[in-house]
Image (cartoon, rainbow, N blue to C red; front, side, top):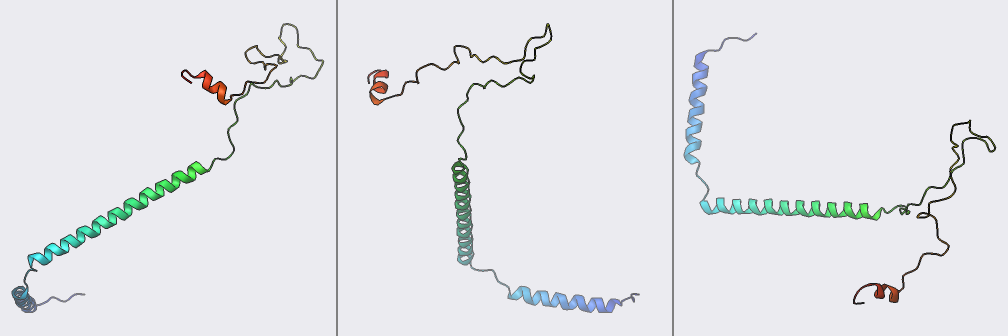
Length: 135
């Protein structure tokens, strides 16, 4: 398996690493403050630019989605109409048993829903203007 190491090898490695660290530490010097400030300003500008591009993409994507959704249209919704009478489930001529009301729907509509004999009035420019006060 693993053989035991001698402490002499570890001590020699430790001394070599400490010597390399001392040499590297003496040669290292911090960057001038102006250079550090310039790097920070460049980074901020890039961050703002990425944020602006992201905002433009989000707004344009949302606008495109809304435009597509509004453009669907499809079939227009028809106005509601009173239900049409349907035929009875029983064959013609069959009568309901005594005491049970007939299920045959009435073909007459209440006066409020019955169509009138004349067509609805159409709006013209003069009649519309006359129906508003001051017009």
